[in-house]
Length: 116
Image 1 (cartoon, rainbow, N blue to C red):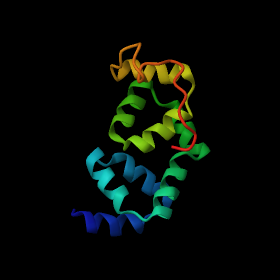
Image 2: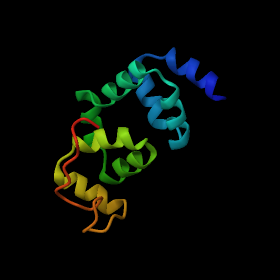
Image 3: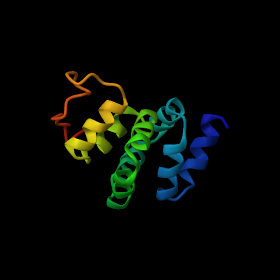
Image 4: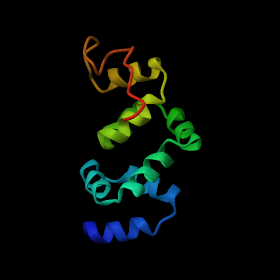
């Protein structure tokens, strides 16, 4: 499916289904799609990813699954999801992603900006 067709189909879906579809897309394809969305659509999508139900589901994932999901998301979306996790959970994900302990990615006390 080309990007235009994907965009039309994506826009026709209810928000919860958009979140699911977006999360299942290959990282580069998700990034291209996100860039083609209007600002209000991007905001709506990110907001839906961070809603309590979505965050609850994300937090219930096994750390390995969380890490795999985060690797597939655009950085901006991944940062929002990480910001909602405890320092312990972020540390576990950093280890799984292979960040050295003394790097920014491996920092247990990483404070993520709330406006990302």
